[in-house]
Image (cartoon, rainbow, N blue to C red; front, side, top):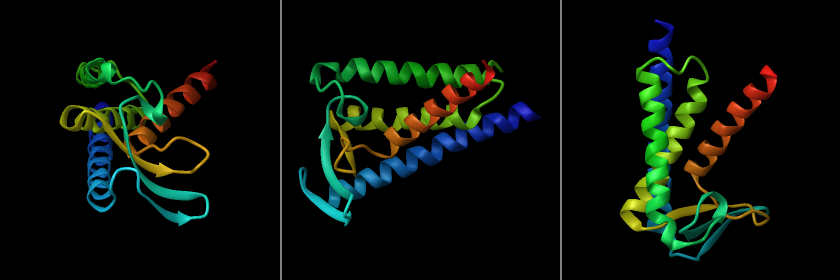
Length: 149
């Protein structure tokens, strides 16, 4: 029963992240032309950026598009397979965040060729909901691995 709840948590988390990511990017693309910015508070803007690289604007090489799609899809398949075959025993929330984030950016890469970023703190490259979910998921996993040591 616990594993079924874990699987539900993983897949529902991935679904919520994916929906939030797709909707937020769609709103940004429809309201702001690429490169335009809208201030929210002094340290935060919504800035429409199209990113061909990975999270936070790293590795800005368009040639990497399909490699990044393949890697993200491999991660998603590995997580789903591990969950289905009961290899994942814990941290379902973290794995769901990673899966949802990976899928959100994969959809952009396949459909648009780039990833829409928009959360802009001015001191850090713009990012999106998917990047946030991926980062939080990885931090949770690293934290738990570190606590085990």
